[in-house]
Image (spheres, rainbow, N blue to C red):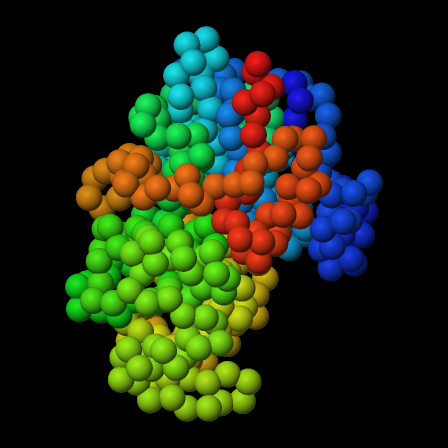
Length: 392
């Protein structure tokens, strides 16, 4: 089958790091991402299905791995070579049922009984058996050498990972169900109340979807979204933000919204008072360091965007007694419902297809990755691979 593979190479990784993650190096002759004919993944058991991807989204975690910015913590939790792509809408081979794939590779998927404590809690993203069972090492589809991923013609998925897509939901919206599930999980983790001021820091895919999920599931008194680019600002308003501000004005706008006091510090200001709850969706050191300075004492910060090895000043976290949470992946929420089901139910009213595009062929992967790395500046949110023609 035709697929993009991430092939691990220490010398190439060193070259990539030396280049500072230059996109030309990341997708050029010395790239660890390679297009070619690879063996189709085998079905690990009787409850598994072959899925033919239609669209495969390019996630920030994918570009971080390709450009050498991903945390090395993830290396022993991944098997190589792997076909990337965990944001997937496709069809089942044989009957053509349209599905989205819930990529977490927990105990049930791996055929392990009894389940580990985390999977038993309904949190397969935190599975303690990701090195065991019927699959190679891997946290998720798209980072496991045995499953394939959305950047190839075929992947395999366990029945528990598959969710049928309503006929009314176009592929361009369905490919965003996986990141929407992450956002729903984040919103429910943060649990904003109706009398709180909430800030969503960052307006890429995960930031915009987090804003939408907060508005739908835990609507606050005021929802402020920090967005850098015009299209992001437009979409943030459409998805429910009460106020959209630029990164350079966030301290002043949060100050006004919360009657806080602003103090000028060395390098960064800080607020006495501030937001009750902040969702940090950039994963960057700058975003994290700002968030803990404009969130009020005793407030909460939920880290949603995928970080690398970022330098964060813990001084304000300590002095303010902030509660810092992390929202990773999805599972079964405190309500007893699966996050993916909640996301699928919410998706039709959000007009997610407006966030998807441009679409690229696998053969255009260099341009696709370069575009994804500049998506906000270029007026895009979710860049994806279109594999539908490969089935024609």
